[in-house]
Amino acid sequence: MKKRLSVLAAAVALACASASTMAGTVFDAVKKKGYVQCGLSDGVSGFSATNSKGEWEGMDVDICRAIAAAMFGDASKYKGTALSTQQRFTALQSGEVDVLMRTVTLTQTRDTSLGLAAVAASFYDGQGIMVRKSQNVKSAKELDGATVCVQPGTTTELNLADWFRTHGIKFTPVVIDKVTEVVRAFESGRCDAFTDDASQLAAVRATQLAKPDDYEILPERFSKEPLGLMVRQGDDQWQGVVRWTLFALMEAEEYGITQKNVDDMLKSPNPNIQRILGVTPGAGKNMGVDEKWAYNAIKAVGNYGEIFERNVGQQSKLKLARGTNALWSHGGAMYPWPIR
Ligand SMILES: N[C@@H](CCC(=O)N[C@@H](CS)C(=O)NCC(=O)O)C(=O)O
Image (cartoon, rainbow, N blue to C red):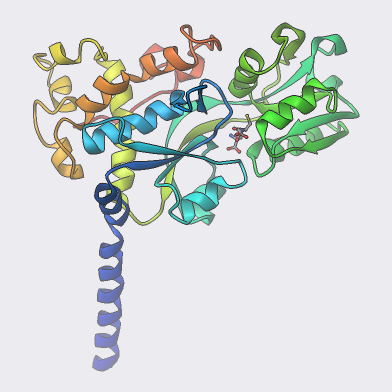
């Protein structure tokens, strides 16, 4: 009996040892190579796309840059990997990327069955459907018998089937891998409707359709799409850096810290601001990064509200309203956990 117990104790010790060697592996590897590898999509303007100079732009890219700034004090220490909807989870599982911020909906299945972990939501969306105005359709319920363009391996594809089945409406999916090809198929009339996260439909309409005014996004929202960040399971330190960087950007907005005033804010008497900016040390040390991690992130990309407005809000072509993405204190759902 004694022997059995000691074998058990040894097994437990071994399991604990392997768990502790796991902790920090991604963090250490990122630190060693000197940059963060972010999984992005190359095709949704406002969220993430490369410009004519081949540079990454968009809200997801700015969050990637903020993580680089928190890790290295330098927002340029990142690389982007363009991933299709089909490739994204395998790329994160295999270690090709360190963090995924590719308009990924955080779902229970993705969080529990892929060896991956959902970190936090960076954008609350909902699935919509877009049609040509000339079709004279005012509701998705009028789309009986329609062909609908959709991308594979997405929640979009699943919600589409659920919603149409629930409402007893027949449809034929036209499944196409790349968003640029979906747009071409939709424009050429190969499908009657195009379904996607509503903000991405707005982005596609504003930036990729030749005649944006010819199209309409119907009022129905088929689903909740909390888009956010995912990492591999097994490295809580790395997950912490990713989560708290995003929350720091949101807390910065909450406390009025901007890209412009962040240096003045170092003198603020507000203890919350002092903790966020590392004037009162602790948060950085706890995560194994510089105490100026959040300061560096805010200085590089601005607070969450600034990132939103610049990429998808009023200063962008998309002109999306903050809506659910407003801070909790302004009637939205963005409720960052406190840095303290
Ligand atoms: N949020 C949904 C769908 C997100 C999604 O990937 N949408 C497409 C449609 S715009 C996309 O980002 N495509 C970009 C591309 O194919 O490069 C999910 O996580 O499954």
